[in-house]
Amino acid sequence: MQHPPLTRRAHRPSSGQPFLGALSLARGRVHELIGPARHTLAMMIAGAMQGPVFWVSPDWAPAQPYGPGMVSFLDPGRVTFVRADRAEDILWTLEEVLRAGIVPLMVGDLPGPPGLTPVRRMHLAGEAGGKRGDGRALGLILTPEGAAQGVESRWQMAPDHAPGVTRWRLNRLRDRQEPPRDWQVLPKDGGFAVAPPPSGARGRAG
Image (cartoon, rainbow, N blue to C red):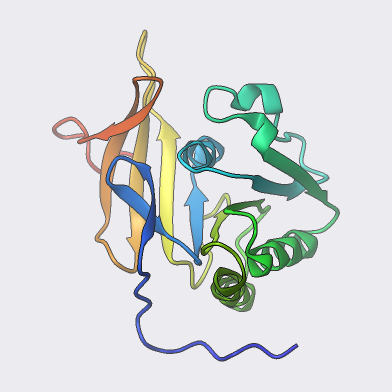
C-alpha cells in the first residue's frame, strides 16, 4: 500500500482534544508522554475523552495495565488491552488502529523511542483515519527516554506528592504550536486541574 508523502509545511490541526483545562492535544497526530507518571498522564487524557480506548503494551513487561487501578481516572470498561510479543507489533497495531479511524484514543506503551519512519507512518494513519471515521483519533506513545523523533508534542509528568497532598509536575517539553511550560496537576471536583507551579519550582522536573 502506498502512502502520500508528508508535506514540509507546518501542521495546523483544526481542533484539539482538551484534557486538563485549556491544555489540548492535536487530533490525528502522535504525542509522546515520558517521565515516571507517564501512565498516569495517559489515563488522565483518556478520562477527559469519550469512547473506547486501545492500550497496547509489551507482553514481556513486568508491570501491566490494571483495570481496577484505573477507576480513579476513567471507566476501565472502555479500555481494550492488547499485549504484543514484539515492539514492532506495538507500532503496527498503533498504525492500523489509527488508520481505521473508529477508536478515539490509541495508547502504545513502548520499551524505547521509535524511529522517525514509524512515527511518520502513524501520523499518516491518523490523517487517513480521520477521513474514514467520525473524527481524527489521538495517538499517545509512552517511552522511558523521551527521544522519539517527529512527534507532535512531548510531555513529561512526575509525582510531586507531599504529606496529605496528591499532586504531579507536568512539563510541556516540546510542541509544534505552543512553547515549553510547566504546571502542577491537582485533583479537583472528581477530576484533575492544572495550576502554575509554586514560585521557584520551575524546571525541577528536569
